[in-house]
Image (tube, rainbow, N blue to C red; front, side, top):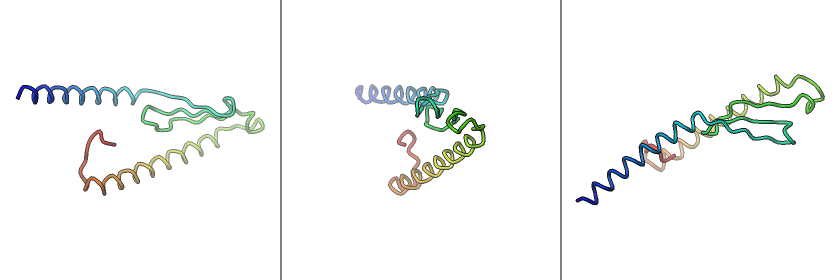
Length: 103
């Protein structure tokens, strides 16, 4: 019985640690780049695209603002659709049960 109590304590600690890690990821920021920095993308720890920056010289000196906004909107739309697809497919497997921390 003592082993079961130890396992339960370890599971509770692990759950708290996972929750803390998830919270830390929400505030994390990561930047990727291509073309020697000509295009940069910033995402949060969950992989959600936060910003896209394109160097003006990449576009022949034109203002990249509108293109950045369009690419950002398209990336977010794709992420939303991927999330919906993942939830639908996992829902089929799990029988609709919400299994926190699984995906």
